[in-house]
Image (cartoon, rainbow, N blue to C red; front, side, top):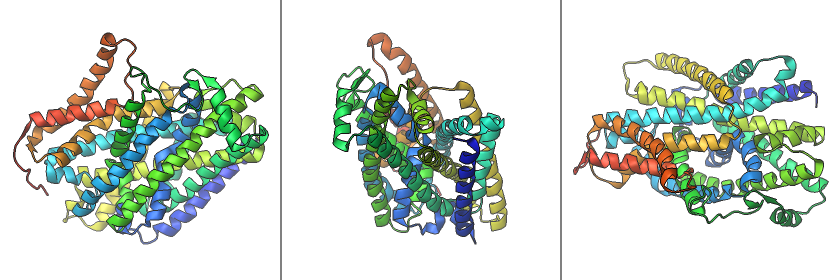
Length: 491
């Protein structure tokens, strides 16, 4: 398909986002930007969070991974469901009870100001790495699809996309993102369903026949539809995967300011819990459909003689082996997966830096106008940092970004897991000034563990469950610098 036609659809899509941003950004203030004035509709938040949770990596990388790992990713999805339920009935009541704008204020109240700053810093690091990795993958595809033909370099493509995101999030923040994420999730899921329907139709398969076909076609790990793996040494071992999935969700959603910023923008705890439970159910169904698509893509690739695998498989088939209208729907679905993974991250990082690092909410001596201008400058700075990190991923160019993201999450979210677990599960207080050292030491110990373990257990590979180990090491470290007393409230 002509890159001019694809570019026209991208521009039209962006104009639609701008119109939503203009409508929702009218009369917005800092409270609108940070938590949507706590007036968001829970159904919109739940549906929109699907797009944020999945991102372009899921859109491309999960189907591509089926050829190598079958449906093993669904083991992690089972863990996701457990994690979402835990968030709904353990973490959300805590956040609403304390009436938080930033969830890391809990660490300040419970453990101390250094713990609070440390939790915020690890969130900023984690979300920056994760969001830019997701953004890189989709920018790369957009570059290959459209802008290379116009002679636009990769850095300029990234800059253009970030400017587009800034334009529609600059004023409204969360208030705008709740609506744009809903739109973008809708387009992403439409793209997913249309591609599945086309493949089934072109291969003359019913849904039941497709499932049977996936059971008879094999990859390196067995049948494409194989879900559970029982070798304890394998990184795909079901116990490790389910456990990792639960804790990944608890940390990357429940302890993540971007995700919770939208969730606590819902007015009441009850509706916020409805949002989280609905999200858990929808995620199980949607990711299973992504895995089904992945299996079908490999069947279709075998039929038409395509040898591409991994992250490049879906774009290759959608753009070069499907009708033009399906290609357009794929591109719209892809950019719909791109924007939620970046717009919310930039907004949340801006919010976290303003509230947690600068203490903007506590600065009564600052006028609202001064706070707004400072927040806007930080918003621009965060976007610039995104540009730099996307370029770093471009230079590294790893073939499977979903594994990169899960690995980074294991190292950077582990200290957050340990901090919140210690605060919730114990009544002990810590030597606050030593908390940053504990939180830095834990990921370093995990790095050493990852290199040492295979020397003693042949063939053993750490997977996402390293996140749990990281959190446990942080928890133990906090115990060693704690004493038996209730921590003071630190405002």
